[in-house]
Amino acid sequence: MRRFFDSPYAVVLVLAVVVAILPLALPSLFYLRVAALICIFALAVVGLNLLIGFAGQVSLGHAGFFGIGAYAVAIGPTHLGVPPWLALIAGAAAAGIVAFLVGRPILRLRGHYLAVATLGMGLLFAMVFANESAWTGGPDGMPVPRLEVFGWRISGPWSWYWIAGVTLVIGAWIAANVIASPTGRALRAIHDSETAAQVLGIDVARYKLIAFVLSAVYAAVAGAYLAMFDGLVTPEAAGFLRSIEFVTMAVLGGLGSTLGGIVGAALLVLLPQLLTVFHDYEHIALGLVMILVMIFVPAGIVPSLATLLGWKRS
Image (cartoon, rainbow, N blue to C red; front, side, top):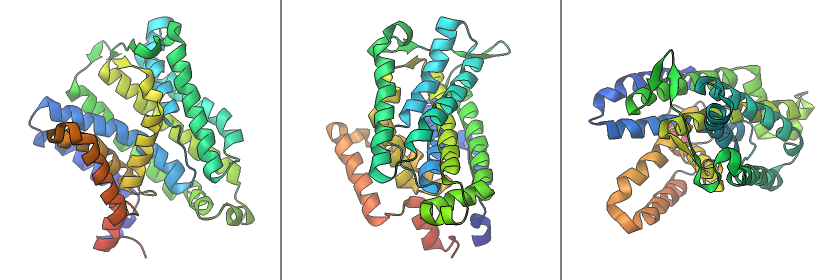
């Protein structure tokens, strides 16, 4: 059992099984919608975990890339006549290009300087989406055309659950391959010590940029999925609180753990649904749960459980 969970591909196998059998246990379309949202947010967090958990680079503006993907599938079909599926691909590519151009200068920074720089980047994206009303609809947002593939109009929780779930499995598989590759070993070395990594001959700037671009593409695809799922996109998709939400999901589940990112996303999507019984105290209860988790399992839920059960490699 321990050897099984040491493998980065174990998460992919377990995730694929869960995604396949979960609809059988869900009693209604409401729960299927929640499951689809978990898959969408988990996809963004899996990418962000490559940057924060493995490369050790903090980003407080990743919702900007999420917004790029979301607005791409709205602006492309509405203003440019681009099919939604092509707009999705273009949005992911645009996020990767922007991350490459922005990442080259800001990833030279470290610590809180990098956090502030990425925060400014995210705020800039949100301001553009809110102010360019001719293209984005302004603060009220704009409708998003439904995705069509081979004449099939995709809508509803059932369709989007399978699309998001399969994409999450593919995203986790790609992340597992990155983690198990020389790139993953280089990222872990950078996480431990950038100076030591440089002494060992690792091109620190190059590998940090790779992680930044990969995480941006993950976020853009997730943003496009959420926009097409809801049929509406607003500047809140690229807002500061969304970025904080992504980081919180990664930290709660456990940095440096792909499964941890997925568990953290599930936790933060599910908790507001479960805490609605508290009505006006919902946000207080949510904050209290998060504080208790960080006090008693500071390494994150999944790494702490792995250590407790003896699954973590010594």
